[in-house]
Image (cartoon, rainbow, N blue to C red; front, side, top):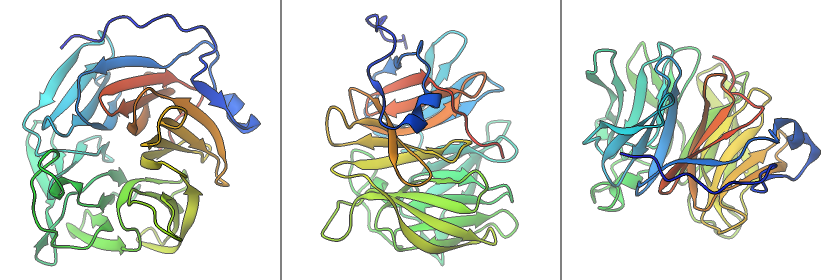
Length: 316
């Protein structure tokens, strides 16, 4: 797979990176532009950075594959196919790849073997896990909105057996416990830098009195959620994947509302929209990576993008 053709020159500073509040100014790099690293996906998702291998992995759900971008060469290759319509990815405390697939959450071992961590709850199969994050206690938290059961394009038409939920998988018991059912379509999720809060994006269509937005919960004792509330209203579009930086800002993918909206929305800890990165297509997910951790990778609907910023992910 060849990378896309060389893009047109963009004059610094990149006009697609917009500061809406002085608090965002410190995160902008004046001599950096949004770069398209690859295009040719049908619905790109779940970027995860492997610094030890100098590569990024991500999912292409309709094409039933995972792709790999090599930092050294810019080359893109197929990492895994078929992939069981995999979606979100992360790394656990040991650095192993953890992936949300249709009906299950799996881990890729160092030798390439795949271990199924959880594929059901209370005797019923999971719907279609979407995104997953690791907690310092070794647990994995994931969402299960069930998109892989809603169409043949991203999965298989099958019946929902469980409510749409947020789960916590315990590494000692190997059991996934429901943490929240209040969000209709729980999608992207991330912890605050101190792990006292969990943010969850809701991708259900908005209705009267129920905006499409990002919700936040207090994490009680590392094993429970309380005091769920709306953190940020995404307005006419929606957020899919979300990430928290070391300062507590939320970097949220934004899409389905057109030019000037689609891309990445940067939200301060108080819920204020402080910065915007415009992309020419819907943004589905994102992660921090690169040699210094200050490169933001973004999966668009069909492409992979990056932008150097002065922000990094929190350290476990």
